[in-house]
Amino acid sequence: MQPATLRTCARAAVALAAAAALSAAHGQQVRLRLAASLCNSMTGQVLTSQHVPPLASTAAANSSVNAALAERLEQQRESYFSRLDAVVPFKGLYATGSTDQSFASNEGARYAFGLEWELYDQGRGEARRQLDRLRLESKTQYVQLLRDMEQRQLQESLLAVEQMRNKLLALLYQREAGAIRPVLERRRQELAAGRATRADVAEVEYKAERAALRSQHYTGLRDVLVYPQAQELINQIEHVQLQPDADLLERAMTRSADVQLQQLLAERNKFLPSIKDNTSVRLYVERQKDFDRGPYAVAGVRVRVPLGNDAVRDAVAAASDGLYQDQQDSMRAALAQKLALLAERLRLKQNDMRLLQAENRLVRQKAELACYRLDHPVSTLPDSDRDVEELTLRLHEMQREILTARLDVLDVLTQISALVKPREPLELYSVRAH
Image 1 (cartoon, rainbow, N blue to C red):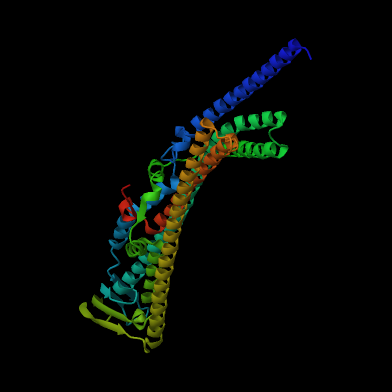
Image 2 (cartoon, rainbow, N blue to C red):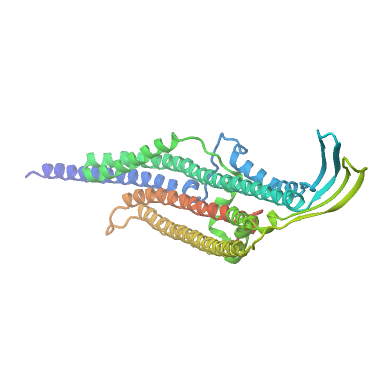
């Protein structure tokens, strides 16, 4: 071969090698540039924050009908009961009178008028007894109304938490769909270049479709009623510590509508029929005129006492009292169990959220390592492009899990609050310093 030909071949080989190196360097620059953008987005404020962002709402804060009505009923209960207790019963005083006319020739008219005071039967005692029964029935109906209203209020509060969850998921799935879009485009380019399989593309397509469908679903749901106090509490929910179980139980027992209703029902025993209910003691003062005598004044006592005793009645009342006491003890035990289960569930949800936060820190460290490997490639290690992408998408998923876990804790705390009915938050929980 001629020397000129050899020099030409050598120059061509050098040119091809230089072109290949330039192409590889350009490809590496593109890859590093794409990866750097992913790393920047990964460490951005959106994924760094683990707080629920402000959720926009067009619903008015005072549109909670049940909460307003329950609060009004609770405020009016004592005044309503005091007004019932202030009602004065019948005093048992009667104005009496009678007259008759005899048609016999030797008899004349007869009349009487006076004042009579009945103490028991159809008098002062019976009037007080009937009034006490009406008071008891009115209080029972009022407490039943309050209990039903509290149950509807709890349902409304839990619905508000669920609506907050839907609003939050709509926002997070929108962000996730936006993060998946460039990853899917790059997978398709890698598939065309032979650096990815159809299964790799199908996996990212599935994640993109899932994020798009769920974003569409949650975005189309009804508007949410966001309570300002819930928005503030939810971002420090992991530091919430419940008050001691004994204190919560005492408050729950004192304010429980079911317990109050049971106490009112227990008072019905005193209205069981008794011998004294049919006893009549009348004090009277009258002015009378008989046909054969002049007018004269009389006064006296009329007594009517039924024969029998209250032995059976007393036995029934004692049995009922024991039954109601057992019922209250059972309600206390059931309420204590429910509070204990809810408190344990709240602590478990908080623990789950802390585990998610720990896993989030682990994934973030792995992502930072993958970003470092992209900037400082090692020939013996595989490319870190996909690690950065997969870890970025995993961080989006973990952010969604952490923020929805906050709502899980709020859901349980709402149920505990419905049992304890705290006048202020410190009666239910305290927030540990962090």
